[in-house]
Image 1: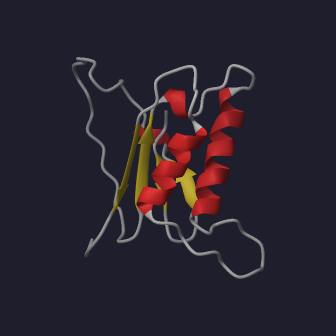
Image 2: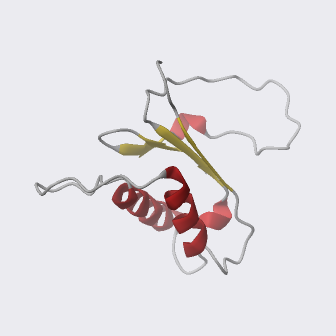
Amino acid sequence: MPPLLIGPDRLSYWEAGGGVLLGIDASAQVPDTMPLFPGSRLMLFTDGLVERRSEPIEVSLATLAGSVAAAHGLCGGTGPRRVRRSIDDVADGLLAAADGAADDVALVLVEATGPR
């Protein structure tokens, strides 16, 4: 699954961030880097968090992005910006929503702090 980048104004999937699955011994891996500004968050997750047999994965990823955007007050529109939820609340909400998933679920959600 592509990592999800959550910035102060928007979120996006980092398509360049996908690669060999964790735990797989693969040679010739090319390291990649990206800047994370203070307050930015990076979310790594397994397909069990989003995959639903009843819908295409693209729909599931869009649904996840919408949920994460709402939790971060990034819903768009011209109204006042909602308060951004704590990293623990976001993770707990995503895991609760995946309760009963047909596959295993793993989630890593980190927040950059301090100077870049």
